[in-house]
Image: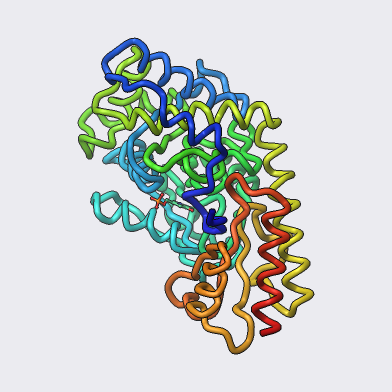
Length: 359
Ligand SMILES: *Cc1c(COP(=O)(O)O)cnc(C)c1O
């Protein structure tokens, strides 16, 4: 078996994999309705959200579908969006706004940089027509965990709706929807929730859905349409039924294992182990632990070893690491802790790295 140290799709537990084999189901039958409702409730329960104020809207697609649904459905035609960019996924939020002709500006940072709050306040002062702010919680590009506490406070003070890409943090990092003033967050089944790729979702405040434009910008990704039909047990389009089975099982497993806090603890233990051991071998992290998520950390490549060589040697021993993107492609590698990975798997991985470096 390959141990996947890439940030999704993840290694599945046996119980999640076996859930894929449940009976064939028509998405217009009551059994599907029940499955869908269970998932929607459990997604809200991950962060103790009330179903009166919040809705989990399920889509068939990858995490990017949820990002695109969130941005296109919630920023109205007379709204204006500010996107914070400090990595690939922040830039993707801008691309979405650009493609759909949404009025937006971007606050650009170098990849991995901390959000410049002073600069943000200046930008907001200069653009007092901003209605929405979009940001990535965990920037998987570098492993930086952006601080949403400060952003939430700024947005609440200025009556700006906060849209969060939590695709690689939902289920394993703290997300305080109510006190941080989050309006919506986009996430996926196959990262920290340990499900199968093919289903993504947006957790959204119901009053924000009610305020959306009546004529949608997209047919397939319109959140109000999905939400209305899902509230009645239906779905506008065919959903990925087997992937739903797996997600329901993964959510049940998360609950039994102690919820997001227990998962955060487990990831954190794995991440510290990797960080300490790699450092002892002379492999430096890109960012300090205090700025990084527990979900993924980026490291400088060991001296004299190209990414491809390092990757291929590890893969031959059963471990898949993840390359850097863009200009980081030649200088870093990434190690994720998500998925059904045990401490013993990480210990073996580290032993293999050590062996490769000795050779
Ligand atoms: C993985 C990821 C996405 C979505 O990627 P997909 O390939 O569409 O699943 C979006 N944002 C972040 C921060 C991610 O890590």
